[in-house]
Amino acid sequence: MNPSTLDNPTPIAPRALLHLVNGDSTLGSLRQSGVPGDSASFGDVLYEGPAPSGVAREAWRRLRAEYHVAGGGWTLDACLDKTTREESAIDSCRERSEVVIWCEHDLYDQLNLVQLLDELASRDLGSAKLSLVCIDRFPGVVRFVGLGQLTPDQLASLFPGRRPVSAAQLRLASETWRAFTSPNPTGIEAILARDTSALPFLAGALVRYLEQFPSLEDGLSRTERTALECLAAGTLTFRELFPAVADREERPFMGDDTFWRVLRQLAVGRSPLVTIDGEGHAAGVALTEFGRAVLDGRDDAIRRNGIDRWMGGARLLGAESPWRWSRATRRLVQTPRRASPE
Image (cartoon, rainbow, N blue to C red):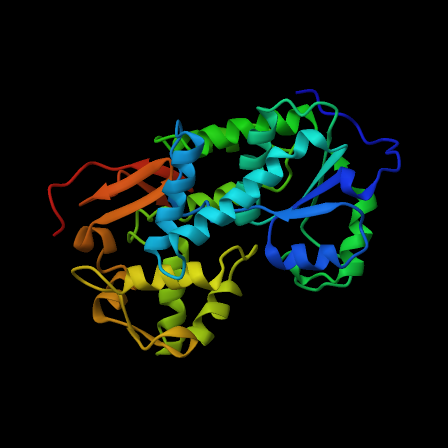
């Protein structure tokens, strides 16, 4: 596909233009903004759960849906219906004069952006133009977290500044998506070693993704470690803990449902790291003695409990994670297998 330029965009009928928006909150505000065109949301929590390469469309849809259902809060039909609506919007791109992708700089959005660009790069879009609105700040917003913070008028002000999607962006997105879905995650480091300026927020997002691998030092992801650090002084409710962890992120990317899943994983296993008392936002979360030992560097979460976690196309399974992230060297490290947890 050869992307078209938008140097002199011509007026178009409202239904001829499609906005693909990463987030339902932003979608609602954009529909109130007066920006012409149809709009649809897209996006999945790709930084967790299985995302292996070589999976056909229908199988991928079911694989991701089953993962979300297992996490609670979703039914299989609801997940499949959401994915079907998103795919239907993407299928209509060829019939549009322009497709505008709206996203921001964090890990959640950048992974969805590269997946979407890779998908669009593989299609014949006819004469449809691709353009992008992707920002990491907005005037007057002290701590910009995402497009969902902005009012309809603020979103409308971004529309004239959209930029054409370039061939370099499409290539980088496809190469990144292949690396992300590979069973060997070192391909992500290879992406980081090259020029990623075509997608200026991608490198920071990928580094943050690698920090979600269990660390070489204690077996904790960055999110898990931050949660334990926030609990070091005593019990917190989920309502208190979630924003405390988010405040320590340079680019907050995790929703409360996903963070609840993280906490539940910390609370199970042969040696739980936290206890959870209650349900919902009022639930109390506290460190266990084992959790404090791991936080203090006296023990290792995986060596005691093992691991079963997908990171993109890599499944971390067994008594030892096959890949860990070294906080000291800022690199992935391949680790030897062990027979069973200690």
